[in-house]
Image (cartoon, rainbow, N blue to C red):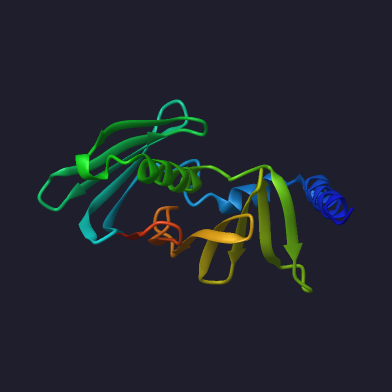
Length: 199
């Protein structure tokens, strides 16, 4: 009996959670996009820590036809680390260094880079402050929540699955409509990506 009660309570909570999500207005959906639709390209000085390994170089981000985005990471000496193309529903690997050619890492990069160019979801809720200022936007996609917060100097997007945080993406500043500084901090995998815009 107790087990049945627990299951029905869990199911009703999940149903309430799903039904409470509304479609978010486009102006709030666009806030969580790190890169605006009209950007052409950006170059970042980049540091990537994966496990015990540290890579530095330049990350080139370029808008491509057919609403895709090319992301290429090369070292200062010109050696290519990875070259991927990200679309709203597609991810194509053009090249990846053999050491980094791991499914878990590529899936993580796909999710991370998709957050740069596309809104996480159309469903969720918006929380406003007492003076009408935006406090946060919570996007929902299945069991994953994306929590977007903003203040006067920086923005932040957290990705949580169930109640566990697995990504914190922070960005600040602006140069030619693109963020000047970004940090991807992961909690389920030893991966840290730090970017500082140079062009």
